[in-house]
Length: 306
Ligand code: CP
Ligand code: NVA
Image 1: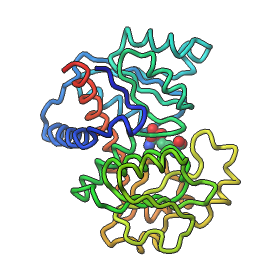
Image 2 (image 1 turned 45 degrees about the vertical axis):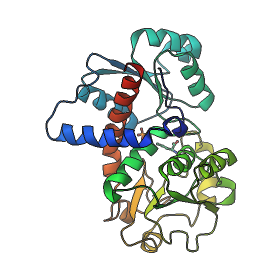
Image 3 (image 1 turned 120 degrees about the vertical axis):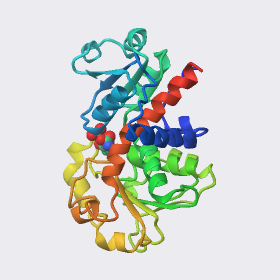
Image 4 (image 1 turned 120 degrees about the horizontal axis):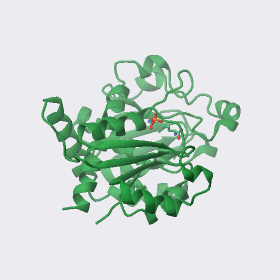
């Protein structure tokens, strides 16, 4: 059966299997074993926004899997000149075996998935960033050897794609989550309610006092997501004080790790000494984008063609 990855909720039943498979394929490949499970297959990658990690990790991941990836900037394909998402989905489905889409809007993402007859993978939209959060959970699993019961703390923009996918991802993984953000940047109610349904402890606060106490994992993201640039000055003022620095890191558990999906803006959401410090795992996390997506693509392909 065709399956899509639009939201973290799309992997609620097999998140652990995907993480396990990703770690297994990473180990095998690093030992020199071929992992060409998608030999002769093609991934179409549609980008409506900039990317370093998503583009390169999907493309190199496909190479390791024995397949091929095509980069499609939506400015260059006919979609940018008014061809419909429906027709784009129907046509691409005749050529490629899977589509990765980085979209400006979650509605466009859903529209593409509705009409494509091949799996559609969300490479970020305005509501969620599931590939990144699956990657982050894989990275936590590697460093902490468990997920269930851990305390996750996210500081900064609680109303963006990362915060929303973290809420769902922590819920699915059985991790307690605390979002620390100015009130006007609290998450959408829907994501808070969905996370709570998994029975984990979900806290939202604007108070920095004791905000990182008991944290096993601290994460942040840019205060100015792609598309929010016009609000840059206003946001920098409103987020003042929410920078993850040595003091906040020092108040967490001594073995706490630091995550950031990158790109990072040092001196704003995090200081460079934390991001490049001993507790940071941001470059393992960046590398794991490739391994997690390899796991996702292999699993989705196997589910479609058992
Ligand atoms: N983290 C992430 O998605 O990075 P890119 O925007 O560089 O793809
Ligand atoms: N929240 C950020 C994530 C970048 C990978 C953005 O949407 O720009």
